Amino acid sequence: MRRVPPMDRLPKALGAGWARRAGGERGIALLMVLFVITMLSIIASEYIESRRIDSLATRNFMDETQAYYAARAGLNLAATEILRLPRCVYRDPDLNILQGCSGSLVYTPEGESSEPDKKAEETSASAPLSLLGRLQLPQGVAIGRGAVRVILEDDESKLNLNSLSSYQLERLLRFTGVVDDQLRSIIVDSILDWRDHGNARRLNGAESDYYKSLPQPYEAKNGNFDSVEELLLVRCVSPALFHGTGGQLPPYEPPPDCPAPSDSDEYLGLVHFLTVGGRGPVNLNTAPLLVLQALGVSQTVADHIVAGRPHRLLPRQARRYRGLTTTSTSFYVVAEGFFPGSPNVRRVAARIEQGGAGSRSGPIVVSAWDDNVLRAPQPPSFAGFTDGLAEREEE
Image (cartoon, rainbow, N blue to C red; front, side, top):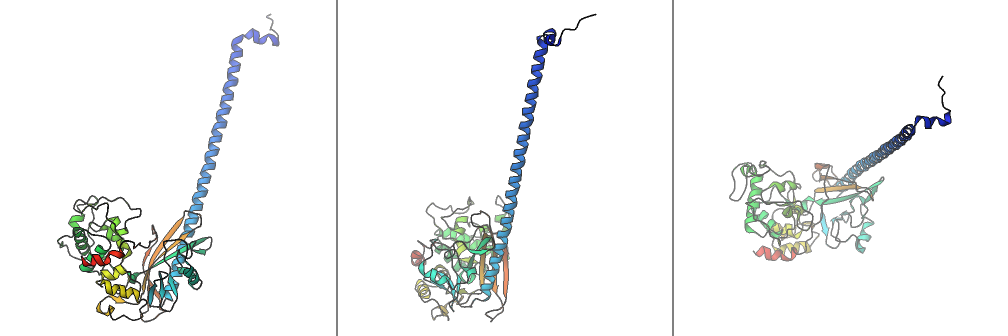
């Protein structure tokens, strides 16, 4: 019978190979444990990160939704004020605000400085909170956890794009900085071609055959403009000419048949002086000097009109010109809902008109609505333009 070696001598009996195999198996087990722990750590961190992202997305969605409804509440506040608005409206030359002839404050636009002046502070105490602009209330009006800013523009202070004559369009382009005669002629004829119902092309205009030849083809409207932004579809109307120079503009490559702009060209921006709303006449109490000039009012009479505001009745000089009034019934309102310290901003715009002919407190009509306005309208800077109106009129 074969004798089995004692247990303490077994490893020596089995040899060095057994010991090496046992040590290697213990190393592999350690590596497997480390691998499993690493994978679990990665999975746990990914899960935590995904939950964090979901939480932020939910919070952003809630903030954006509440900002949207805050903006809608701002429109309702504006509609309430418009409903009570006296029909006689004028622009206060000292505060640069729209006021009713009875003295009630209607609108305060954003000024050059974020700090309100002393007179504006004194006036803000009796002003409707819903229509105070950023100049007096930089943080807006609190609504729930958020806030809302309301920007109100008088449609009757602007020129109706669907009723301007070629003479008025030419003057408006010249006064807003389009000094090139050929470019003015192309844009005027193209606007008239866009509005008319025929396919006959004016000398420097454009119809569907021209627009279909563009890299991104489309057809001419052959009808009235539904929005001022539609003007960007018209031949040779660049974003700089539409919005004005000096801000961030989208890239624009002019068509080969449009005069190339020079580096020295500066435009005031057509969007600040045009509307597709309103009921026709321009309010001589609220219209900028340039709008009066574009209508054909001379420099002398326009200065007299501005200096004599507010006008409760048409002055003798203004009776010579058609399309002037002292009342305003249509307003373009942009309500901006936001949360202090949050990047979530929602803007809702509407064109609100007073209804009930002859009634100061009649119903209101919403003739246009935009649920997703990308940016709020900014007041134009007239520096360098108003000084040269007389010279441009003489050209």
